[in-house]
Length: 233
Image (cartoon, helix red, strand yellow):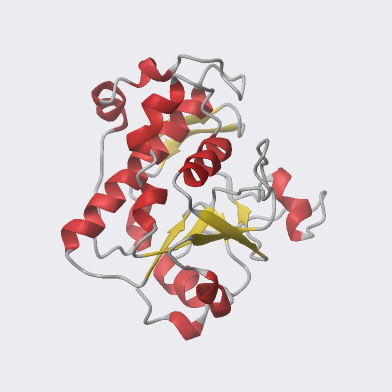
């Protein structure tokens, strides 16, 4: 057990279970020490510009670490020497009550990825908004999405590190677009409650307390998404 605090999400725990990753039942797994990674990548050097979230760079640092994790995932996929048709970037701290429409896969190509159509962040001169909580890529675009970490320090010298804006600008610069699809889900806080900001996107009663229990992700998430894509890697 360990302590956890997220000022922006107003999450706090003195007994966080560090064994929850086992619920993922992953075929490939890599665990890093947060403190060591922050020191290794010299995370303080990214504070060139202001903090867009106004919480003493806590959310900025979490974004940097998330980008680092995606980068590690790309390396693990390449090291596996397996060729996948599609790669989905999925946040494990979300509740996915709706099946994923397999037709979304047909929208993915070498020039476009798929992202959700809600809670969108927009950028000047970019037509479509962006949600960074879920993405479907193919074997030729997953590295572009997952390797934003490699450009992050350079980007930090030019602009504040706002997660969605950095991703959409980086994708646009590499001539990768995206299709916004109607796939709704909600973030789940450490106490099991649905994130308040996500309630209206899901049509939940703002006053009703909705708590999500722990579950085996392989049993619930993947098969709940769609029985038609159980064999798609």
